[in-house]
Length: 190
Image (cartoon, rainbow, N blue to C red; front, side, top):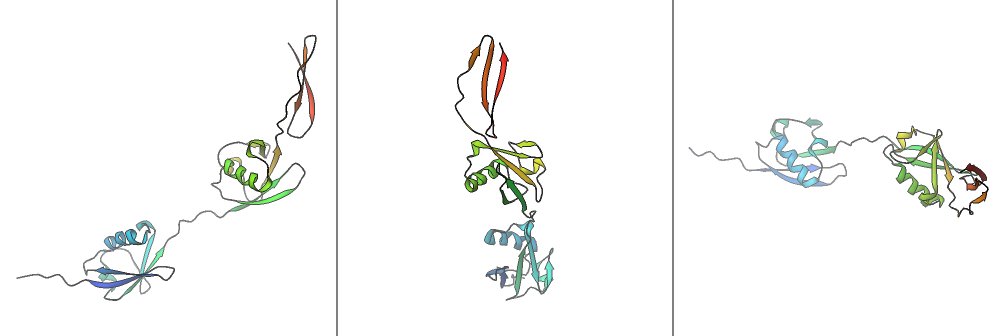
């Protein structure tokens, strides 16, 4: 006795944007095998696929277990990997002017400094960012307890040529320019 396979049937896979793709399936096709084929063609990982037919989610077994027949439409709903929404922070410069930035929890200090350079015109190498009296140098912004509506203070580091050291006997007098544009003396004994 010769056993013949039933001919494949055509089904339509419709994504969230309304685009339909035709698939040939056999009655024995499993959900797992079909999802693997969908991953190849649609570039949606199996773990993020949600397949619906006639308002029923297709999860395990064979496609025919869900009354999938010739010319059936299966809806592909890709489950989104949810990211936390961006939060709003304020950047306050030395003159007291505040600017609003939307940041993500994963944003790094270096990326934020690059955004500040582009928007405020202060080179990254001259930026000193402070939050809650802590200087932000490396890592993620959340490492510094940055949350929604936090205020980050921007201080510009001045790069100036220091005057020569003046020697009075055994005391050296240095003039130091700090980030607030003030000069002060440091005396040290040799």
